[in-house]
Image (cartoon, rainbow, N blue to C red; front, side):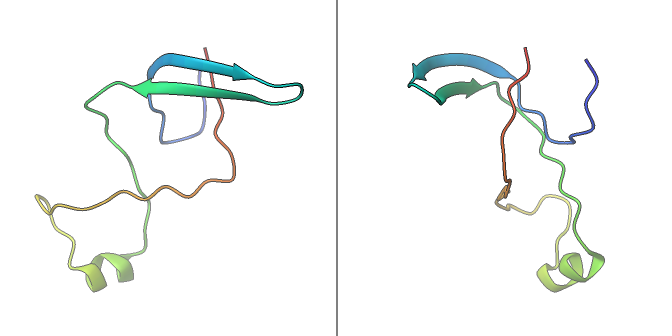
Amino acid sequence: MEISARNVFKGKIENVEVDAVMANIHIKIESPQLVTAIITKESVDKLDLKKGDSVSAIIKSTEVMVAK
């Protein structure tokens, strides 16, 4: 399967909670994973980002899709 999304986290389902309309899927992510972030050069300069720095990857998304 090919998908345009850059950040794909592989894992195993730990729990499935099904209600009348929605379902809550708990996925245990395999480690280590690599997160790719596309940010502006201005942000790199402002944060003085360089290889080896400890950072937090904060992911903002309007939805999470599940593929099998």
